[in-house]
Image (cartoon, rainbow, N blue to C red):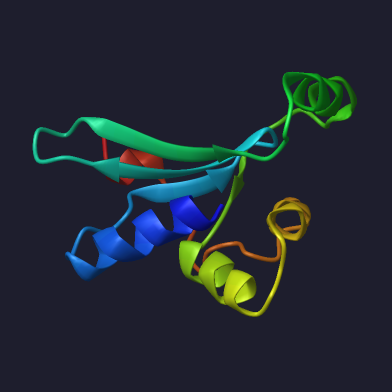
Amino acid sequence: MDELLGTYLRLKDLGIKPLWAADHGVSISIYYQDPDRNVVEIDVNNYDSPQAATEYLRLARAGVPDQIDPEKLVAARKAGASASDLHQRTMAGEFAPAKPYDPGESF
């Protein structure tokens, strides 16, 4: 999680803003679009093993990924939230962006 958020901050400092970010349940992803309009995904697994991720998928709700605001994740991590806490809180909608991502605006 720290590497994902560190990469987000490093790219932000270079003026590179994410296209969108989401918690997919098994992973948290931040998406960027390059100058050729290719989408690049940077992610981190939410579970330490394939078995734990599979168990999550077996029990999880189906649906659309929970969109997140990376700035809110950074602030919560700096305040001491663990990676597991961040995942639980994203799934509860705590880190939702003020304006949800609309793929129709980008593609």
